Image (tube, rainbow, N blue to C red; front, side, top):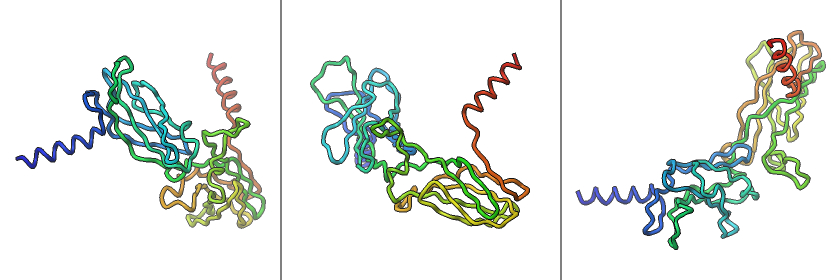
Length: 255
């Protein structure tokens, strides 16, 4: 019976995280990262009652902790703006505290897993911007995915710019009447392939970071197809403005 009690105590200590002596606030558990296209978010449990959370983060090159979501009652926090160096590895702490409590003691906290954005972010589903089928050539243009980060001129930085010489799009294409796929990769967002004259084709695109050991490939884009007559064809995604205008016209007639 004595050995069983010791095991239980060790398990509870590891689950609750590191806490300051004398503090009685629960510490965060189930701390998880979620990251898509370098948008980085921390989630944890439980919901606080008579206390709040503050997220603290630092990277491997600097010892100073930076704070985010200070005195929050939420259990999620986006920390993208504190992770400017996407190649660095970041440590995370979630502090349990009461901003109205005057104490000299260090508040209790829990430590989460480390995270390296460039290695671990998920590459989101690519979008086919347009395509052209002209005789024996199919040209597909992929819309470059944008990250949350900005250049000095305030324009958003494309995701591919964080992976110089290490980011590709792969086009998977087939005759509309067949299930056999071929593929062609490109280091740019334009993919050109030779096809049979008079045939219609269906295709989709994946994004790829070849140097990765895991999370190398994105989800498939939506599949698109050329015209069924096999002649020259082109296609575009509808613009947001067009969709909004259509909705307004429909609303007008309904009224």
